[in-house]
Image (tube, rainbow, N blue to C red):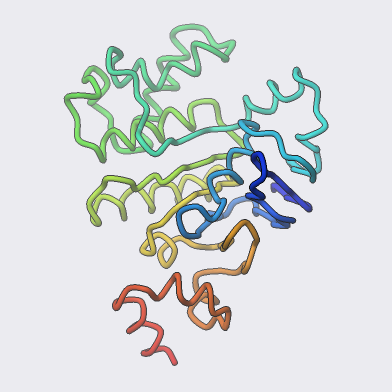
Length: 251
């Protein structure tokens, strides 16, 4: 579980995060949603330590990340897996070597065990047999699955996904959503996803944080979002005709 308490972040004269309080639950897909410029990306970067907050607490299972020493932060980062908006694979490495990379960097396993673990992770994302291919030889959806395999190679407790469906067609996006959700449940990870994809919200949104203009406006799940009375949230969610019709049908 990750808890955020009274988090503030500003850049020069602009207040970007204003008293954010949120709980991201273990074993669930936790989504951060909001318009571009709302602060959700800045929030995630504070959580993983790319930015340092001006004030507030970021608690990893009760451990305050903000107050940790440099060495303590390095150790906790080894418990994190990251999936970037672009798959961020190494073009010059094979699929297998991309997945094996964090194991080579941080694991004490021998080479045979590292290869075995990397192959296991590729099999988990249904890419067995693609080990020797290079990123340029596979589709965008397959690249995202390689990125997921790499992210879980070290058995992380915390998984962070920045717009994992960016650039994918709707059908492939559903595959990626289902894969992230099932892995989250299987490994009981605390997964946090930044997304604009309303299909992801309605498909895997077990715990949803809505941010508007740097403040947390609403927290709930995919069922509760359909009956929300928060006007800003409704304006954001039901901007499309499809979701407006779904809400009207459930009214």
